[in-house]
Image (cartoon, protein in one colour):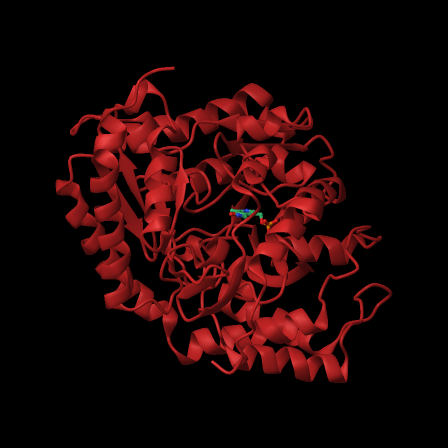
Length: 464
Ligand code: PMP
């Protein structure tokens, strides 16, 4: 890595953080009690360094996004060169820029088949806002204006904008802002450990799919616009659906003429060992949302992949699709995304994830199944979860409440040099796709050590 090491006055940065910064998705009371946020100052490969000098293995690839790892000079050079040539221009008013068009073509190549076109935005949330508006616009053009309702899953995450939160199924997010907006219906998530414990997997799958069909019939198929889901739910707790779930969901959508949308914001760009998660499941969505791994988080850019039959409708009927952002197709972001995809191709990170590091992570996590606190480990490609339970062989949680144990174990993991997230009582991981076997062993080893350290603390928990 070539970046100079800067010395930061961390105490001063923390003071400024408290004085002027409201960090995202935070409990501001807790941040104030802590005396400010952790200041992350640099990163290289799979490791981040904070201002207090801690070197931490980044088991989360930032926020599920730094797929090619940190410190890629090529990406900085791509941004630098593009900024000198044309830092910015928009795609409104019948214009486009070279990197924007090349990136659209590159993404189309990776999506393959019927997904031929791309609409750009800056974030995953915006991508889903675009999905929301494009789908409704499409049905109006098709002469079926009643098709406005989206069906989504409880505990899905589709972003933090009004449409994103509404499409998402996080009840605690709905409470803030009086959401969801009208026209979004939620059904059960395919979460075997949490909602189908001990149930036959095929029976559980059929139950989850039947809920979708029942909801369609309840709303009236003629009113349903689309079904949306993450191939593997990320922020919901790395929820991997049972075998056959996605093909069955696709069949239900086709039966009622409903569009199928995959939110690939986490699953895209190699996370599940294919370019996109839906390719792992062998389904053909009509639209996909992507972000994060598209630029490995080096610059903000997202996209919606659109099927040819939707594009044909837009082209045939004409009329403005009155939607877009100042930064739709931002040339510097697009140049960095193109270079990022080139790195993924050159280093064959997709095959490596599918055939080498993904299976290696699964095996390493499976070693934790002997730990007295572990109820289940699961992973697909390079995304995984460890379920913490009070009693082995059950899904019973500490204090019979979800979310007591997870944050305690997470904090110990971070202290022990591993950045992971706790989602309720799952410790989830999503390392950069460049992660080595030794780093996977380190990641799993720290989770194991941290669970062992946490056990007496958890067993001593008393209800308030
Ligand atoms: N969809 C999914 C599946 C996500 O995981 C996320 C972010 N975690 C989003 C949408 C929202 O993306 P952003 O934070 O870039 O708006």
